[in-house]
Length: 142
Image (cartoon, rainbow, N blue to C red; front, side, top):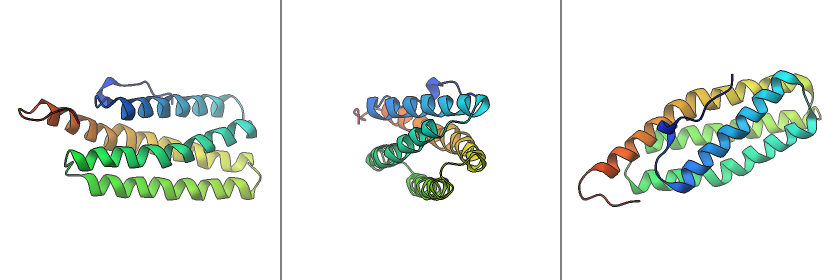
């Protein structure tokens, strides 16, 4: 399944929005490649991207959530921890089998879960909350 960028995912925070767009582009690139052929070197590239993404995006997004007193911050943070831990697990499994095709399916399921449950639900909820918080009188740009 290919995911289209949805403007509802925009917060108005340039960094967060750029990171979300880049994540969706990389995820779609992986999903296309998954459907049309396995290539170990490309797969390593996706894992490297995700490892960097987790280290840069999660703390940045959480900092904005704290700053705007997002009521679901702790739940969102725990989801980030879960995704980071599962990414480590998937990475280890892939390295153990030397990036074998069998584990590729596991990664595909992981990416679908990440997008459908986290990006299109949890992140969307935060984006809507943040935009609404900016519309309230007396709130400046974060």
